[in-house]
Length: 369
Image (cartoon, rainbow, N blue to C red; front, side, top):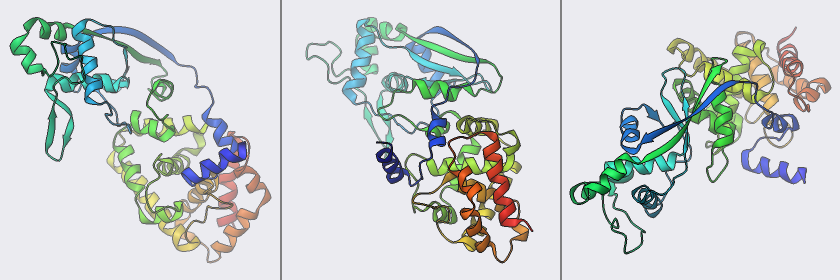
């Protein structure tokens, strides 16, 4: 059964499955001090906060997907005084805005109805949001918010003053805001469960996330990854993050790997331009050098790309770009044939000792005397 799962993973992502990496994803989060409290917002107040960007929807992969009848029935529920499920909001420690963790479809449906148009603009056109899919006897059928305002003052007042309960999550300690990854991981209710980098893309959106997404289209990186276009679940983006985190912060590595990557991404979410430029120059330089000296797909040791070999070799190269030996290809063959290195990159653990040992071994064998 595990072999079948591994083959499915390989076919979908192009990455070689490692037991340690898979187990790492299921580890429990560290201890946080978090408060969660209910807040009742009127719909009019929620829409006002959204328009002022006091409530934000992070960079979700899953866009607005509700149909017009689905959204219409939500609005009718408020008009009829029926209960509606609560939303979950996370307090961003940097600017105290509220990020939507769960409830995107409901919140956007409300905003769209108040704005009068259903869904975002597409090709310069927008659909008027008139309530559809209701019982033919419903007094609200085919009504827009503007029409309700003109013809049914009681109904529009009922809608404006209707309350949507929110549960607001705030991390008290540590003061790094990293718990949002775990909260989102466990609460997101999309049709397809999001994977690690998709979650980071949601909760750590910013200049650093923009950079690694930009670097993902680099031609040399595409050659190393082994696919011409982006991987749909962003595992290729995660490998870029992984390289940068180990290259610039390996001394502080602690397992699990997913938290190490999340902490690095969160810490550099709004990094200064000079640091982002350094990250970019380092990545572009090392990918160019590796393609030139090792060729395409050098990290596909067995079948798919081995993430541990990839980050080990990239890190070693990036520290020694000014002294690449003429026989680097031979040294690379020695590295991937070394029993100790192969044991570390195929290990059943992501312990700090193992991760630092494989990084050190790659640099010593590739660039040692």
